[in-house]
Structure formats: C-alpha cells, structure tokens
Image (tube, rainbow, N blue to C red; front, side):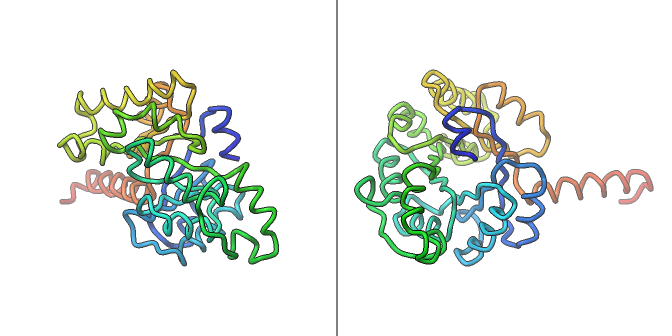
Amino acid sequence: MLKKRLKQNKLSIGGWITIGHPAIAEIMAKSGFDWLVIDMEHTSIDFFTAQILITIIQGYGLDALVRVAQNNEIEIKKALDVGADGVIVPMINSKADAQKAVSFAKYPPEGSRGVGLFRAQGYGYSFEEYRQWLKDDIVIIGQIEHINAVNNIEDIISVDGIDGVIIGPYDLSGSMGYPGEYEREDVRKAIKSVIDSCKNKDFPVGFHVIETEPKKFIEKAKMGCSLLVYSVDFFFLGDKARDGISAIKDMFQLD
C-alpha cells in the first residue's frame, strides 16, 4: 500500500498512464510498478474512462492515483468518487494551495468535499467503511512544478494531509523561462533545493523521471527521492519501437 510506504518514506515506483485504453492499464499493472497514475490533466481521458482504468489497476492489487486537471473541488471530488486511491494535484505553489487540495479531498469536518454515493462508497453499501478509509488511507500528493512552489516548499510540506510531493520538471523549467530545459544548471539547482528541504524534514519527495533509461531514475533515488514515477506509457512504446526499427534499418542499410 502506497500510504504505508509514504509514512515510512520508503522508495516506491509509480507508472504514468496517458493512453485511456484498458489494455494499457493491464500491461502497466502487470509490469512490476507499485502504483499507477492516470493523467487527466494533459490527456483526453475522461472520468468514465478513468473509472474503468482504476478498476483494472486495483484488480491487480495496485494503488490507482489520478492526476487531476487542476486544484479544483469538482475535479478532485469526481476522481475520488469514481474510486481513486488518491490524487496528485498540479500547481501546488503555496501553503494555501495545499490546504485547498486537502479540503477538497476530505469530508467535513476535516475538509469541505461534498458527500455522495458512487463507486468509492460501494454504491451506498459501504459508506461508513469509506469514510474511515478517507481519514486513514487516502493519498494526497502535491505537484511541485513552479518556481513559486520551490520558494514555498517548507510551508507546503507543513500542511497536514499532504502525504508527499512530486516535482514536475517540465512545468518547473517553464516557470523559470526555459520550457523543457530541466537539465539547465539553475533548474537542477531548484530541483535539488526541493529535495534537500524535504530530506531535512524526512518528508516524502518524488520526481517524474521522463526518460525510459533507468539511469535517470537511479540518479534521483540516490539524491533522496522516494516517491518516483518511472517514465510514461507512450515513451515505453515509442522508445522500444524506435530502437528496434533503427537497429533493423542500420543492419540492412535502409533509409
């Protein structure tokens, strides 16, 4: 269970799903990941599809998280009502942003989330169990992807209910004026400052490693990241296909 690993600040490996097809969820769930994220921010995946993917992922015994489109009450409520084990909330740039995310995810009195009955609540047959689960086991991850978040990281991780943070390198580099250039020295320095701040507080910090080459994943783990996402579905597909085709064309001297 991801929540337990977060409490112990132990390394866990997540995968990232952007292709909203059941086969992708099954393939990823059978590949050795500890948990999987369904991305609803930068994809065409809707809540109907998300529910199907969540059901498949959980059927294989993995935690299913949803990266919602924004720090919004409706987005977070719907992701949780269709049965997600937790949410990753983008653009958490301040303590107030983190507090909002927690409030939107939890029922009163801990939060302000509307109370309804759907898949998460057993379609009305396990509401009490779900209410207790929400108090004890929900996972709420703040995404650190703006230079303002870097500057406010200690305030963000002080918020009760935030279980960990994940650094998003693309948006972070963009907020510094260099979209996609996350290997620049100043961007790397910002990333390291977040990791160091979290390590000093023994707080789970993660990173979305884009590359399929494991070297980058290992590098971030050695820096102290424990909540790590390993690449993304389309890169696994694309990199393997490109490598194979390139080798074949080289062998036969094809253009």
